[in-house]
Length: 398
Image (cartoon, rainbow, N blue to C red; front, side, top):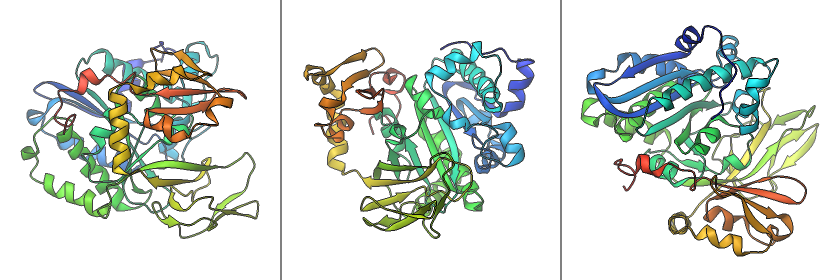
């Protein structure tokens, strides 16, 4: 990783950004929690401030970090100040930080976060887990979002909440996508609506479950562990399916977007349902599926998403195909070649890929981003995943 712009009073800055650091009595995994990457989503921060200070290091094997995200935005209860902090973690942007003459408000936050992450990774040879807490502007069941790597899937499936994968195809520069490209288990937990007290409770429960599932402590050390598990299961109404993002409505610059009232995440919708208004023009659903994260706030570029359930058969098939590295056959097709084999990136001609169902690439672990008018770049998280760090973990083969 590149070295970012130097930060004045680095130690003091890092100290003020760390909510709490729990160092166990013996060596073990590290779990890194982020709260408040979006400044109008304080539930994760509140939960981390409450839970981590009460943890007994004597029952912890490894280290736990709670880290503030966008401090400036948190202080003003805004999603961001100048630019969404969860949309600037592209490799090009991170590499450019050391040479920038002026940093935006969010880039200053990014530099400090990068320094802390680097410090944790440099001093830890054990499994590292990155967990980012969020909430939504609309009512929702608690759920997990992941980049589609098997290590993320296997870990996430131990939580009693639905899982949504594939969102990385529709978002540019989330923090967790950047960390996942480095090969680490990385997941987002959406705890509920911004102002709902249950969102804090859900984050608290998720912290305890994460500590146990990641192997930092035994569930017997937390007398309320069964209650935490039941809390999340009940809040999710027993829904534990795996979903895939199929569509995103992106709000254009200067567009006046207004979501129709009453919609919630995971609500079933039909083709043609009236969902929102764009400059007084009705926006209708292009699919029969489920609505996901409808936008009910002024800041944000994602109007809504549409998701569908992935059948268990296809989840198992994709896992098998990835384990035997069936993706190597893709380069036998005309118009598809390695762009960067080490990093698991293919380059594909659009003339070829338009005749191939996107689901084929998804089965093999590839998510695409359009490079230019004629080519796609296809990213595979399996080839960069640090499986060797996690394969001895209890959750890996369960």
